[in-house]
Length: 345
View (cartoon, one colour):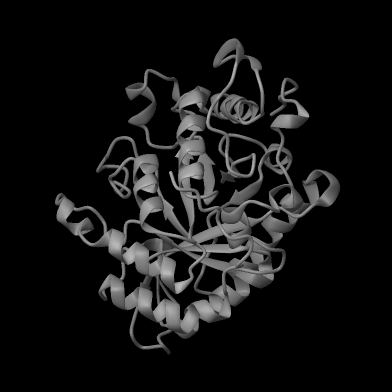
């Protein structure tokens, strides 16, 4: 897909462009892998009570030194398609968690750029980034739930084009000073979006293809979030390595940009339990030794951050988090610098 209207200012940025971005730098460095936790810690099953105490556990995740917490973007719960995410609006909930945490990066996985207007996305994102001291990292996507697009009055078949247009518009809004923007999604003259992000930009991590070609993702994404392939054998990470290599070979100038992947875990208390695929490979049941082996394989494959979802774990969430913090996190520590900005809003 070719987008000649996109300027250099709307293209993806390399590692050096985010050297002062606390969230990005906490999560990413070349040849290293860090760990994040996907929310919710337990799936909504008709009762909001399942989320009780989750913010306190996020505070624990922050204190223990995990790199990121991730929230999904699910505007409407379609039980025929999948789960309800963390139920709360992702931006409102991240603002709430920003006030409860100090170090952990706050990540969307993934904000549906094709459904919302770029001004609203940019306003919410920059606000959370300021309130958190620069900790917001945005996974972004074109959306895939069939109920969403007609609900917004949009055409499902146009989501790829809208996604690319929204990315360009969003990045233009991040620029300083008086702006004039002419986009298929809207136009204005001599106005400015406030606030601006703490470090001047919000990292945009494209999820999967999002309706674009691999060349587009290499040129316009600040990083790439993909499904991991099989996780119970070394062959899956090997195939993932080939995919990451093909993407990085296309990045203009060859600069480093991070890759992320995720897995839904049933982490059992037997550390020697073998890696066993469940639900057609959608969930991995394993002991911590198998998880450590997988994460080492991912790191060797070029993955820079692993977002772990523990919703399917049969053990209590606090117990799983504690084991991850004590036995797994020390092998994949978060990057400590730069510290988030602390401003007394």
